[in-house]
Image 1 (cartoon, rainbow, N blue to C red):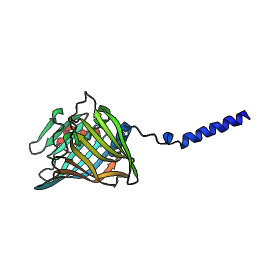
Image 2: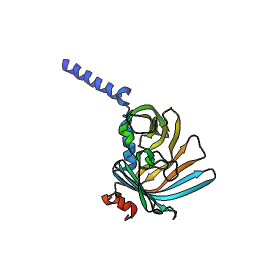
Image 3: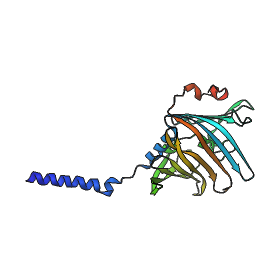
Length: 255
């Protein structure tokens, strides 16, 4: 009889734990959400073809480019059109960045002090183009909000850099969907002022994944100026030779 009572109580306790909102609604760790979003976009490796459009009130220009990534610290971006810009390239490897310009036939290493500067006159910085994942380890992360949006759960995360981190931002605020899509990334300065925002404008299936196919970066003080990246094609987890990510290949493309 005593054994039956114990078994009933155990079963009741397990049922309460299963049905309890506190037990079933544990929020994910914000750091894990950022890591998963980064991994989702880059994969183990990737190849993509995209168009960058720089918009200003009195002019607009577009460049076609190809991009290769391997791991979370290696990226090569090369411009293919228009003809006057073709061949311009950027290589990022182990937190180092180099640019190549065919017109002057020179490879230039970008110093860390220039990583926050504009990339090719766009609203994206050298750091943005490198697709660096430094935010994962060099920031502390806090989940600010969880909400429902378009049938998805959406997480808003505040990321504040460590005191010793070599970054220019006072904080970043990321909005990530439950399918690992980065919907928005805000960049705040040291005085708590929102400087620029990157937003996903279009989401669709590419390369067998749901990804943000069009993203726009713009500064708050100049709303009529922005830069869009539109991805036409992307492949994930493809095999890239190590020779692809070299200064020699940056100067003399073999792929």
